[in-house]
Length: 513
Ligand SMILES: CC(=O)SCCNC(=O)CCNC(=O)[C@H](O)C(C)(C)COP(=O)(O)OP(=O)(O)OC[C@H]1O[C@@H](n2cnc3c(N)ncnc32)[C@H](O)[C@@H]1OP(=O)(O)O
Ligand SMILES: CC(C)C(=O)C(=O)O
Image 1 (tube, protein in one colour):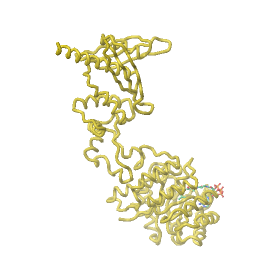
Image 2 (cartoon, helix red, strand yellow):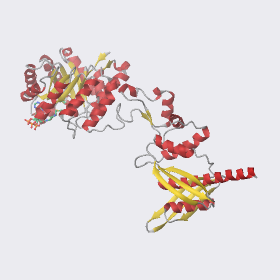
Image 3 (cartoon, helix red, strand yellow):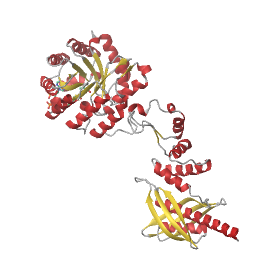
Image 4 (spheres, helix red, strand yellow):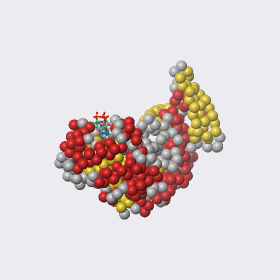
């Protein structure tokens, strides 16, 4: 199994993400976590960029052990001198010198021809060699460079004693086949290529950074460069966690792996996201919130039976506690039943079906049904009164210049559906008047209260009513994301309780007679 060296550039290329600006303390904190993650090499910044960058690189260089600490430099002596200053105190320093090689960069940015690029790079490597035993040389925009010039530049870097030669697809232009082919070509055409490590450095402009990096590994790359969460210039760099987990999960295919502490991935991702302010998308591979979350019923059923039906790696591997079965409108009975058991409720089939129907109704209205929601639904369904009346729908019209009007449709125990409309002093009053027309009952609303049983804008509202008839009072309870719906459900529940209580009382009187 071939070892792939991990060169983390979160603190340099990652920090080049627009809007990201890490101070020294934040860089050192991330550096310590990268050390715990077990990366091999850490690019701490670009010392020539500013005195602050130089100081930050120096702080990182002094703070971490057992990691090669790197500073980036243009092919200019003042930049190389800045790296030398910044890496004072580093246990294992390395300089990373770069120069663009593509026709576009040669002509329009550097205004150099090939010969001048070659000579400038050679002079820079020789100058760096006076101070550093470890030198990485990058051919910026290698992805758009002529193959023959790539070979010429890499031959030069090998001859001048570079330890690593990095082949950036700087603008994320290539496909996996093309990028992998560059490594194949260099391996076959550069003299003494085995005297250096070849490195892959990809950007995600076309969403192919991870695939390109893996293609480079399949074609002989010894090192991969990337960032945590894939942050970086424009659409970002290769995400290190994706490479690490691809090699771990598909060892039999890649025959290569990193030596990262995979269980530190989740923690590292959270820290980098927090300190850089770069939010990780929910669907981000490996570290996104949904990466180990399942909502659809068929998936949840499969997961409950055998996790490998829908998970090719375990959340524990990256340091997460467990997979999440998210209850929502796509969930099925199996996951619903399991969650109720976790909450302490084992319902019989009929009660479960009733509660499941209530859950689905709720799930149609909410993004995610939380445990509190479930408890509210279950506890409402656990009311013992049979449903003489079952609310099917309500329709309310309200305006501060019109009379509130409500229309209700209620199923009765004998299988009929009754629809009534009424006005009221307010929406709830209109609803209750319409329900009274259906039931024909004369009850007094003795008390009405409402509270939120869950959190957020789509929180569940719970309404409690006390209905009184002939000195007999009962409580009704209703839960819904809409307070008018909860009010109607509570009133109908109270009516059912009242009828049940009256029946029980009558039975008792009959028995006593
Ligand atoms: C692909 C990458 O991510 S490369 C790294 C990108 N990171 C950064 O740019 C870090 C922040 N940058 C900076 O702070 C500044 O650009 C500095 C300090 C590096 C240079 O600032 P300035 O001297 O003002 O130059 P400026 O940024 O305007 O232009 C860059 C100059 O460097 C030259 N240059 C660019 N790359 C290289 C290189 N690898 N080697 C030598 N010269 C280079 C350009 O040709 C240009 O030179 P010119 O002004 O003679 O035309
Ligand atoms: C400096 C080099 C390695 C780089 O960041 C790029 O080319 O993307």
